[in-house]
Length: 63
Image (cartoon, rainbow, N blue to C red; front, side, top):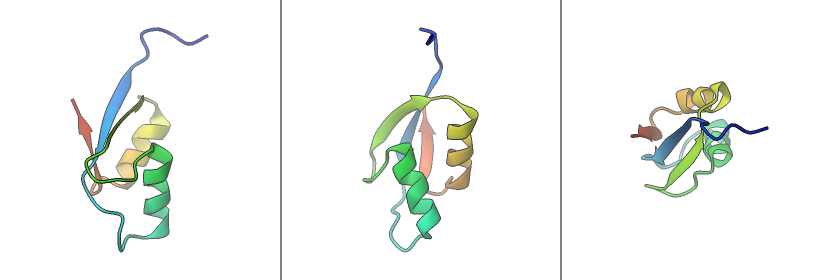
């Protein structure tokens, strides 16, 4: 059962996937990002944190 106090993290895309490796493009799509300056909210899990760590030059964590 989902906990009501689940931590979330807001992720903003700050870089373009143009001329980036296919793997980095797939990570952005997996996070739900596909346009510049788009902000999405995801659960704060180790998987999401790992995806953010793979593309730190393309995304930022928003407060």
